[in-house]
Image (cartoon, rainbow, N blue to C red; front, side, top):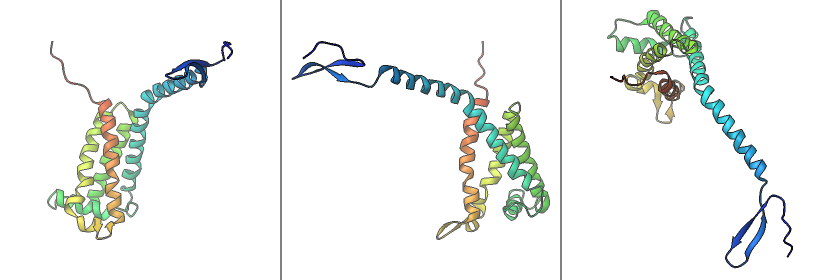
Length: 180
């Protein structure tokens, strides 16, 4: 055997064979892949939560804005019924839609701005109470023996939006107050 070095190889010791050159992936390529991964991680750490905050805000602005226009939102009757139950019949009809539209739109705009993200998160917490209440109050409208109705799917998808709000809150909320 020749003792000439083979480019991009390292000796690997095997119990019965001894030192023998084995062809490995070029170290330079592995280093470049690791560097690209590290750079991507830096970008994601910097921009993924702001992107999530803005996209969640856009979702709430869009769905909130629909409720300002009668007949545009597929959940109008559910919103009106939910407000009726939650307010013991004091709020319902068009007022329920306008209030929901205002809450959702303000929350979305606050999240998009970034400056008022904590306020937007509080508004979303209020909105999520109303959004998830039909699961308790109107299960027959949301589920059949075959599974969730289209309306039920519309409500259940909010679990993902709640998780997104929690990720945003983990970055937007202040930590504990430290006493000197």
